[in-house]
Length: 114
Image (tube, rainbow, N blue to C red):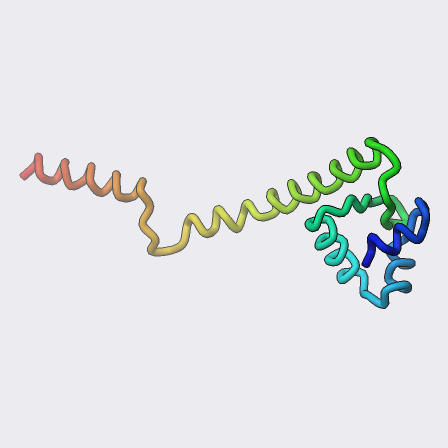
């Protein structure tokens, strides 16, 4: 869908607003569609500066720039998820291996004292 629009644009850049107008999709739906098409192997490049939008790569530099943007977004998501991972590792009542090691050490001390 987006790929076909970019082919018709003959190498020209399409803003997100233009894609929304041409497809009837909302901005979030456009991003999801681009994501689906990329997963299917389409090389849809992104421009992040205003106005944001999409284009077909002209050269390796376009691919590298878009890859840099995608990796940066992924890293930002990964970093944002860290507090949630840490919070889940400290669920109340959950026993960790470290807790079990400490309990065994305490039991050994108790047995030695008895």
